[in-house]
Length: 204
Image (cartoon, rainbow, N blue to C red):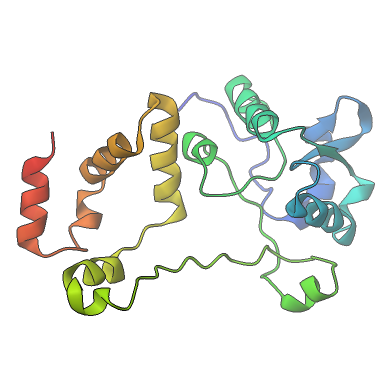
């Protein structure tokens, strides 16, 4: 906590943005706010550009393209460190969203018809992550298969792990140990109690 009061506590939705363009004023075009879009050439960048038009926000905001992922995340970190407002696109899970306390703006739920029409006036399609194993493992290592069936993490938890890795220049092994230490109440539900006891005993 740095004692910074929220600048727009009532900004909840993309439909609220016309009222707040001055808060995100574009230094190169002070008649509009600045929306910091993703990387040129990425599909999500084109989708975001169309979203601005579909939501009628192109009248209020410039569509500013970040030159790289480093520039995009760097703009977010710099704004937060200075206590300045930031409006743009980013994805999860990523270290920067584990490091910073950002607020996603609400959109209408994902609608395939919007995507089929290429108007994109809705949230992005939720990404489904599947855990897939060779069928032979069902018989040869049923305990591992059961563990994988039980395994479940959230984007927020993964953000935190990635932020730990970035802040500490940690390896994946070091991050795994940190995860086991930080989220004991989570992972101990994935394995039998005797296995959990052995893992806890082996942790530094």
